[in-house]
Image 1 (cartoon, rainbow, N blue to C red):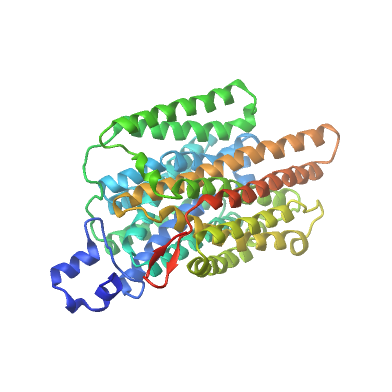
Image 2 (tube, rainbow, N blue to C red):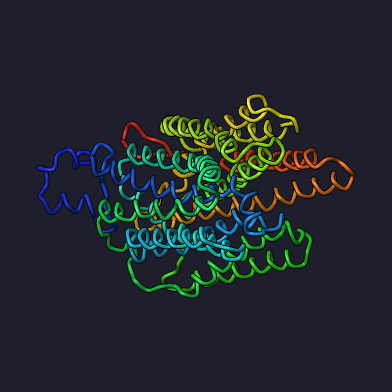
Length: 505
């Protein structure tokens, strides 16, 4: 009898067995989307994803106001989005391990508290240093929340069709949140003021916290032991932090600078030592045999390269609309409104296509559509118009992002046992956030070099700024296209109608 049959016929088993089928040792398992409890849990987990992904983009429209109010320089302004990505990507692996070790519900609560408190501090910040510190703490809180939420989802819905539908909804919300964050940031900046891009989080956290307590039952840790790999944790987190920090600083100090090469070299050394440690300790934070799951490494690499090209679009396009086209914050935010709807639609379509064709072709097709959209946006002129030069490219990107989110999320979790769901979720989200930081660092350097060259040649500022955006978005398109090629090595997960289980090619 499968989980759907058990849920539909509770009298077929004794009450104790029925209870175990619903809660299990690691939380609620075997639920279906046809049940009220299952839908409530999915709604809550999607709310967590919405909160975390919105925080990555909500400050973008407010950047000019933050620069003036907190006395940032043009070069240091990149730290507003990058500080969040720094700790978000750096601590993600640790967050996933803690979720398996201490319980996912506990980590969700702890991460939500960290996000709420740090956002409140950031809203009251009077200088750039305190604000960046608050953004760093926000990323830490999100790194605790997101692996716990995604691993709860993958272990709650075990029937293949329900699991893929739930992952499709999750992926749609995640993609939608990146665009919705900019829209919300524009509304708040134009209305009550830019500080509300931070103040809105404590309100959201105050709503999420009681929902987590009420909806998610107490779960026992999924890890088989409470021993903790302290050295591995320090090396993994330190290596990830050093990598992201080096990528973020590279545009300022130069890619050929000694400090940049020292940071990259140090990252290689730290992570190499980490691999050696993980091969020798009895209870590693990253059991390396997880990469024996076919296609998992390729799925994470696809996410890293693909999201490097996709997510940085919001940063450059928002600055183009405000600084070149003269849009107000709310107008720049509203410009993404069609994108939010299109991502929701494309994620639903991608989920259905995934069931029929498998995750691999869905990822590849979506990535190529994103690449086409970015390439189209890279041709927007100085005197461009929204309907003619911005909207078409935005819609193409939107219709590609949804399937990529759905496909990569499904492929990266396929074949992973429940006890390592937190680890798999952490690997995926870490790769995506590091990809975002990587893309922002690389494309900022490309765009800035072009701007400085044209300004040195006496070109007007709007023309130089627009040309810099062209170069940055074209490079992003190349990354998106490259991710389609990497996706060839991912596991092609899909619904097997004959057996009701995930099949692969």
